[in-house]
Amino acid sequence: MKRIRQDYKGISLILVIMIILSLMLQGCGGNITIEDLVKNKITRIDDSQIDSDDTTTGESGSKNNNGSSGEDTTDDEDTTKDGDTTKKGDGTTKKGDDTTKKGDGTTKKDDDTTKKGENTTKDEGTTKKNDDTTKEPSSQTITQTQAPTKAPTTTPTPTQAPTTAKPQTPTPDPINIASVTASGTAVSNKNGFTIDYSNASDGYVMIKSDGATSGVVYVQIRKNDKSGTILCQELYDTAGSYMSFTLTNGSGTYCIRILQGASTSALAEKNSVTTSVNIKSETSPFIYSCKNASFTSTTNAVKISYEQCAGISSDKEKVTKIANYIYSKLSYNYDLAAQIKNKTVTNYTPSADRAISSGKGICSDYACLFAVMLRAQRIPTKVAYGYAANGVYHAWNYVYYDGKWNLYDLTYTDDGGKLSSSYTVSYIY
Image (cartoon, helix red, strand yellow):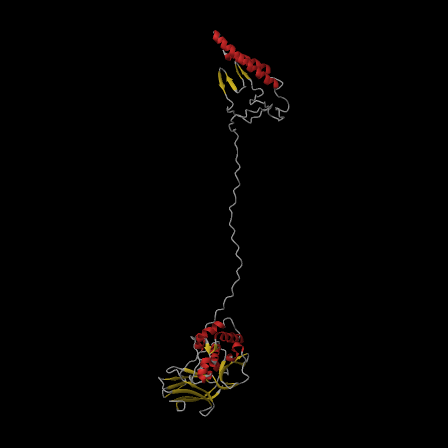
């Protein structure tokens, strides 16, 4: 390779001399051209140097100064292919300094000439082309590898924390009370008052005035006859409509009387019926509406009773549920109790709905409300009037379940109070 470089330097010097000589000859009128000089000289040099020892041949292909296999690279930017000199007739193609001659025409390529066939490998060796040469794409089809298509991302459904199911409030049963009625099959009608005892065997009778009343009207119920023990004596205060009264002493003879007068000391009998009654059971009279525990299917206390007892089947549990409801809603009305004691209020008739709406009541209100709400559930409940151990006129209840009558006094047991040590019954409703 060093030898080739030296030859090129010598060629360059010769070319300079020949150019000078040519100019001199032209100046002297000679016919020799620079092309003739160059052609003759280069041909002789190429013929003598084409098989130089510096041209790499052999078993392993081309070798460069850097020890790389397959390419022959010089320190200059020009690269000469082994065996690239082809003689065709009179025309010689010579590569060197990137000048290509074909026939009589000369095409000069500069260092930026685009060469085709890059990456072509010869059996005997591979020649690297000029580093500055712009390379055309090879004819090989290049298959571009596409990036793999990502699978569609599914947005995960957020997992909701398990919700704790709220306990559902049981649906109340349809209201189905034991209603009282005046059937008209057994009736006494005198002096503007009607006594209907058609359902006496169920434990009640119905009383009605035929119009407006004057003075004081009492309903009196005695056992056996007119001289018998008074079981009930209540003021009749619902003019023009029926009121029910309970036959509280079981099967036997009852005398039902209606008394009217200007005062309680001047009462006269207006109508009466004495009848033998066969009561169906000792509990049957105490599931119906009565004077001191009056209700219908539209009474608010009845509705609340069904709401409170929804989902409960045991009578005892219903009693406890309703008692606790009354404890939570009512407080004792000390003002009303004082008015009754001082007789500024007389003939007080309790009302279940009034007690609920006001949130207050005296003993008869507690007993009335308890009886209405339990009788609406067809749980037999008595309203008792009489005297407690302290000698005060009082009202309380007896409730039937577990095969017996159980005493309840919500007035005393409200706010953690205790039952009286003794009770004396005067009237049962």
